[in-house]
Length: 89
Image 1: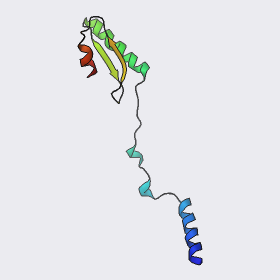
Image 2 (image 1 turned 180 degrees about the vertical axis):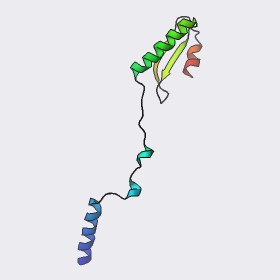
Image 3 (image 1 turned 90 degrees about the horizontal axis):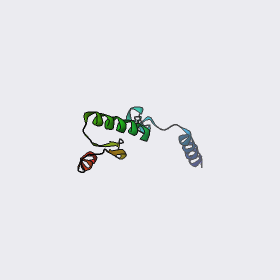
């Protein structure tokens, strides 16, 4: 009977105690991620279009997020149709 009570008490203490240090994730394994917003993508896109217009070379421009997904796309007047393919690859 005493062994059962001792086991229950030990279990209660282990449930209330903090986890061992091995199971705690080190902060060095985590990093903060800065993500580009649509508004930020539009700033980049507009700057690219302005530079291409200044150079007199119509372009297709794609701005992507950190996962490679499209945030903004522009095909300037006079840009070659195939350049839409190269801009997105």
